[in-house]
Length: 184
Image 1 (cartoon, rainbow, N blue to C red):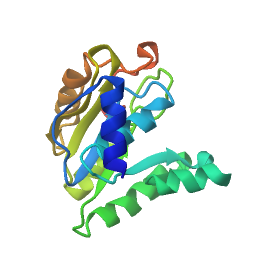
Image 2 (cartoon, rainbow, N blue to C red):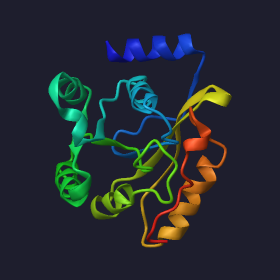
Image 3 (cartoon, one colour):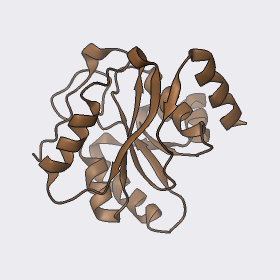
Image 4 (cartoon, one colour):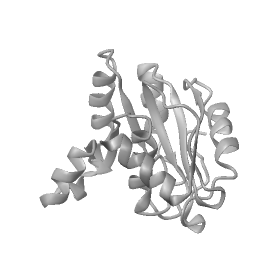
C-alpha cells in the first residue's frame, strides 16, 4: 500500500525517481530545509517498497503525533544524548537484517554552520554504507546518489558529500547548511 501511495504521489507531483534503493545502510537526506523533507524522504524510500527508520527529535513524540511517527518508522532522538541512540542503532544494524536508517545530517531545517556527524560515526562503527538521498524541486527529481563506506579520512568522505549536494537545492534553498563536519 505504501509503495502504491508513494508512486502515485510522486507521479502526480511530476517528479522523477533516480538511483537504486539500498537494502542496507544509512541514508543521508539532504538538503533538510523544511518540514516537508520528512514526507519526501518517506516517499523516496516507499517508492521501491523500503521501510526505513527515521531519526526524529524526541520532542515530537508526544501525544497522537508520537504514534504516527512511530508507525512511519520514526526513532526518537534525544539530541542531548545522541551517542546513546547511535549506539543502540549500531547494535540493531549488526543483526544482519535489512536495516535502512534515514538521517537528516543537517540536524535542523534552518541554516547552520555544521552537519551532525552521527551518520559518519555510525557507518564507521557498523561498516554500513552511506547512501546520499535527495529531493530537488528545481529539477523535479528525487532519489539516491552515490553510496560509500565511511573511512578514517573524514575530509575526503565529506568531499564526496559536498560534490553530490552542490547542485541540490531543497524546498527552501536559503535554509540549507553546507555539508561540513566539525571533525574536518
